[in-house]
Length: 505
Image (tube, rainbow, N blue to C red; front, side):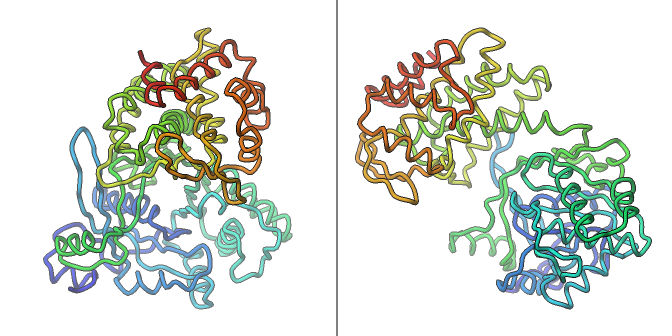
């Protein structure tokens, strides 16, 4: 079977939208991973189809590597397939689209590709720069120099690219930072300005960055599992498509891309102008970040550790259990969403929570509970504690589900101790003797290991008063210590599901 290419698609009679090979290169993209290709580049492709905008994306590998990605995807004309799989509005979705928005992938650690990147930087066609270089990508590296070809850090590369564009007298561009850190656009600009200072570059360049370029903070949200790992399933998909595609990637139907900016920005982005679902321009993405953290991430951290203790292993199975699903829904609808009403539309939040349930019930993704449990202490502090405090402040009473989630979190870390090692805390579940690793910060693991054998009242008190964990003494929240102790007693005596059931009774 032939590998996907323009020639192969013509041979198999593909009738979907394809941009021609010679379409102008209007987007420079730092990052070539599954997320960008399945999310951002698919948006560009669909926007081009619906609006008549024509522009190709030049992908740039953000780090050096000999794994051959650029050579491989360039060999198939930079075409690849995105499978959208999951549940949406109660329906199972399994759709394929060939994405034709990319023209080539460059590895700037090769001299010729570095030169090609800088040529794109000064091109008359360039309009937009996109990045997703992971959370660690937007970071300052003092070792980077102005004449490195290329510098190691992404902000240094971008500063170099934009300085070349400014020096060539070209107009400013739109920069869409998609890294999962707060205020990603602002932080990217701050670090670039630090390099300008380090390298002794012109003040006029800084003025151009701030006034002629639009460097946007954005918030992205979709789940991209990536390639199909089962060889039999991959072969069946290839047979269905009529071609091989080593760079095929899978994503869920849900998508959200909030871009901080004004109405003039919306007109310049083809996927926004097309009215595609899930993408929007807003003066401030902060409320939407709060919605995502408290509803989506907060739900995960709220029910997952306890569900593992209750004997479950993947998220989807939890969604099929009446008690756990009921616990999650009650927590979101009656405890989380009311605390968001000051910043966000309540009905919009309810719709988002409904979508979260469908996303967790994706039949194509086996999302392991233990992978979600990584660093659960810090996650509960960031995702669930603020909601608990806001609820208490507004209602004058404890949110039963959130308080119960804290008890089940403690139970996750306080099953029978097998051994303490540097790579995690090895625990044995008392229910059936299954061993598992609770991975967290060293101080958290040491904290619980030191209290193995202590009675539950002592453990609860010590946990709630540990300011290193929570940034404050949680026993100051009226009634919380006793509630958590009582809920933990139910977990010990009747199981975590019984504690969930008691919270929603």
